[in-house]
Image (cartoon, rainbow over all chains, first blue to last red):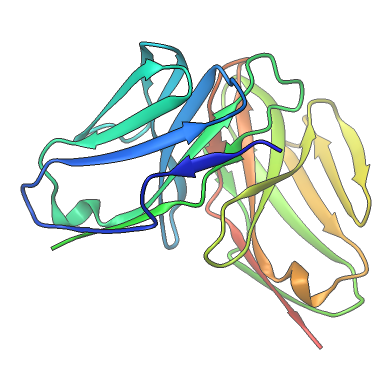
Length: 114
Length: 110
């Protein structure tokens, strides 16, 4: 089975802190994604990476950056956390050329910024 | 812009059939996926329609009509464990990312 793990299930940070959210997948997938999920807004794409060191902005990249130095690991960085970044963050991975376009999600990190 | 519309909430009785609709307005539409998410859990893939018509996977079926910009997820023989949120998601062009709807919360009652 594909396994996507995220470094923390719950995280509490203070405004202005630099925050790192880590995601690791074990299926050698080329594509990885970061979403945030807020009530009533569904899943919104922050950034994605289609290969190592390659990244593309999603729909809401402001205030975030990403890093993909190794194929299995995709990091989301909040340079200076703000209260409006309090949310559930979901990481996903996908095999390139997947016919069904299946994305496999991690369990999520619920981030609270005080 | 890109948008997908689905009902926010649906309630159905155990054993019944329920249909969750999804209409989309997206340029470069390529295909429609459905994901299930239980409270506190990760979204999990249910089905994908790359072509018009019906795809069946056990109790779940999904349908797509490109001419109507419309799809639906059909859940048969509802069980209590089907209570969850269901998201439709559009694949744009042949790209990597999915554009998700806001989700439909399904409550199955005894």
